[in-house]
Length: 198
Image (cartoon, one colour):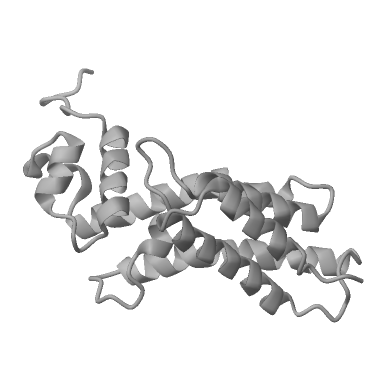
């Protein structure tokens, strides 16, 4: 049976990607509906029909960004023969990705979102969940390292996890302000020097 009605005039995934880049560069509040429509190549009725409100579109954009960040950065946590090497690979992947590239802004969309701003609806929870995803992965990996004897039993898992998350968050801000891949790789290696010995 053939579909009834006009086909959509745009690729939804491409439009969402374009919206993500606008939100990433300008932030939620500074991004206007005109900005979004221009970037996505659609008119506002099509935007509303496909994505709902500006708030709904932003949440989808954050989720898209977070999925990409997980693939490009956080999934490296399982790449090494040891947890230490996995964490190092996460930091070095962040150093490679965070400075941005042609068409991709520097920094981290989630960490650059204004903390404490009066966001509408479920946006604050979406941003918080996105930021805490990395913390959960670090905690899980560092617990494994303690259980396996790679880290001392007295290791404070929460503090060490927050230290490495804070390092990555700081790298994101520095990348936004112009830090290079080499600058951030140096930060990553310095942070790994703080990995506890047995």
